[in-house]
Length: 483
RNA sequence: GGCCCCGUGGUCAAGCGGUCAAGACACCGCCCUUUCACGGCGGUAACAGGGGUUCGAGUCCCCUCGGGGUCACCA
Image (cartoon, rainbow, N blue to C red; front, side):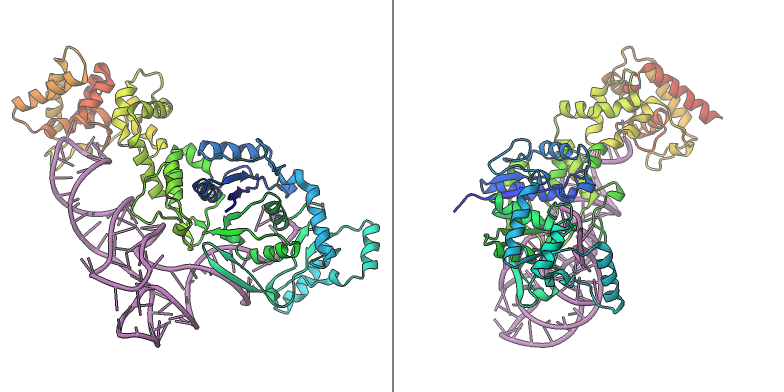
């Protein structure tokens, strides 16, 4: 058996779409699993959509996700160049072969003419299909127009009868009547091939054995096979992938700010979590396992686990994965990662980041939630004294002053302001007074934080704030309760 | 609308003719606990509908319904 060669062939649009990323991932997993060759090809035949720097985004994203290609624009390879715009001259000769064999033809119809005839057909309530108008031009007429420099495109000449189809590793055998197929454009007026033609030519020339792509290509694939056959080329194995959806009706879209890899990274999602989750949207290892490193995904990947139906991208589940990955980080790694987020609200305050990080790690789902969670340490929030009410603790704004004064007394007596000393002093005093922990600690935490819930309790917060700030907040709270 | 594909809980998803239809997320409850989170335990919730085939169907076939894709000189 010959070596498997696959390709990821994105268009440089400026961002890496999650659907595209997942395609790349499955492509990569499949290839590595079978010790194949992974090719990166840039499909930039639409010159109107050229975006500067877009190719670098593709490189960077793939690399940071740990997907490395064996052949590509930057590293070359035996079948380059790997950028379609640089291959412009390779397509027309193959189109001419098709023209000579009658499987394609020159078309001189203008956009206006097309629009007119199309409108006429649709006015009758029929479905428009290119009418093969230019197929009936005589060779002389064609020569004449060509010599006159009339702009032209090259169209595929699809048979009017018979059927075309292909086998897909996910979707099985798909067959369509040729009569429903349009004579698609192969070469555009600017001389560039369309995607439809370029992918066939390049996949052949680059010896691609397995084509993995989104299922939106399912309906045009029969036409590609007609091309392969006409050219006498071997048809690759197809693996079409189900769509990634935003919800039951919409695909993931750029509009909602949740479609691009960079959106998630910017929000504070971990690449490993995103990749792990993405792998499971549309694919299953066949068992209960959910956590995978890239190497483990490669090991576990099997085309048989690919789903046929569109899958909804569940941000909540992604977030759960992210939180799980964060919990698995070493404290050092977490501290490093969370520091910039702490800095957003705590920079320059001399806060004990190490201790704060310990408190925050199990409470971090996505890093962009961090600033809001620790902001109270920088600035005492406005709050309502109803927060002092806690039924189980039997505390309220009425009982709080007494509790706070109790705490104040204990805290004042602490010589060395460390967390363990604060803890010891407070707990000791509470026990001695025969009180319940919460009776003192709940109001104290409210007085120091002004929040319903906080990372860490009263003791941790007091230690983090330092003596001065703690006592000041206590005093303020007493005033507030008195007023 | 034509053509193609798909259809197990709210979501992902196992199931591949024969145990009470796994598991995860989310949600709810309990425990732990100075709040929250983590952790532990438990719970609600599904084979779209209708016909067949079969001793037996979520698993096979047909129809209906529902959803998606595609009908560009975009990819």
